[in-house]
Length: 194
Image (cartoon, rainbow, N blue to C red; front, side, top):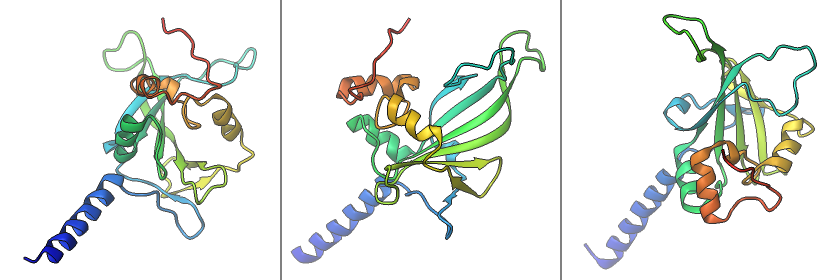
């Protein structure tokens, strides 16, 4: 092989590897809805919360327990580990499942049951003026509709997100990375861990 052919082959292989490491970018339909990533259960599991709410419960209203399972596309996760920030085209998926305390041999605590909703947070800097957008898939939809930018999730994430509009404060392994890389938002006040 000539030196030129080797250089071209090397460049082609490198481009293929770079593309593979970036992973699949978010895909949209003709209406701008986010296509559901069917393989999300093979993504990196970040954390699970039980009964979390970002506002106090209404007086006299019983809390409805749910699990929130958060998954990150593998390429976005690997990038976060290296830099402490989410790369462009990041997709985070939140799977909401009902909680039950009665079933089989269980005598205490909660376990996950039925899927109730799936939501996504997507970083697509050229597509969204806010850089991040939120989508709701409901239960089993092939495409999720974007939530209006007037929804509280946009301002809440901008105000309270520990890193780049995301709630990394609830993902213990990534919070450690953000501390080490110095990427926690300046306005984010950490609470002591007990």
